[in-house]
Length: 394
Image (tube, rainbow, N blue to C red; front, side, top):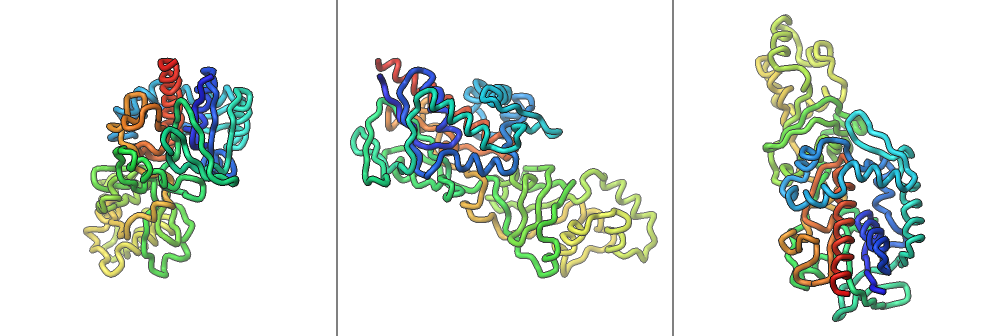
């Protein structure tokens, strides 16, 4: 019987192991951490956003520069297929008002338990605390509690994750090994990352407050979504979608009243007496929440706008930020193995018989179900391609 080695116990690796075992191939799944699916479980703490129920073309646009490379993989395992897959594991799903799809349990652990039970039934061999250290000739080398171990396999799927949340297993340490093997990689960069902001002491009472119903703009990217004020800066889905522009230090602006056209706000302001104070206008006329009002004054401190510029400022309030938070704090990363270094089946051109999947590939997407869908889809694609490779070699 042919043997396939899957290295990495996240969603992409588990999906690759699943389809390989389903094809009748002996599978050994190796994970560096003491347990499988740690990042998946962490994602489940906020509900486990599996995918997004929306039309295929707008769905694919979220992958920007990698959309064409990913298109056939996600077309073969799209948002509908993700939902069917979860139901097949005995996990009913529901779709929220934003189109985001979640397990009814609103956590990852039941789904992960069901998935691992399925892999056990398919005969997948799991080995934890086995950290991949590259190759010795044709054999994969691992650092294990029992010392150095090697494994020979007829095909290998690498699903080693990106370079964020190292404590959960995605440390990007594999990059130098693949570069040494002649693979072309893009430099890692934070994606879906929070912003560093140096607040004055006046903002401390608002730490933890959410900025809701706001519009964001950085470079040519725009977003509607909330963000939270934290002691370290700003974080949340509204900003994560702008990470590609923020990585380039593009100016960031927020519209604190996105549902009110500037013309309407100007007309309302014109009806107010000339002695109207700015604070009164923000609080009593616009009825801004305290957190929004505090942000307005924080970002205009020392240069309060004249009355004629009040509306313009509140519609395009500049956010003075000090860059992105460190990459290890980011939800995901851009960079990794370039698609040009891979065959259409995700096999490394420099290392025949070795396939790559998941976040270790050079793509990025905002939160909202796009990340997990692409991890599952590329894991499935790599697993099926590895199965085809083994069948052709038989």
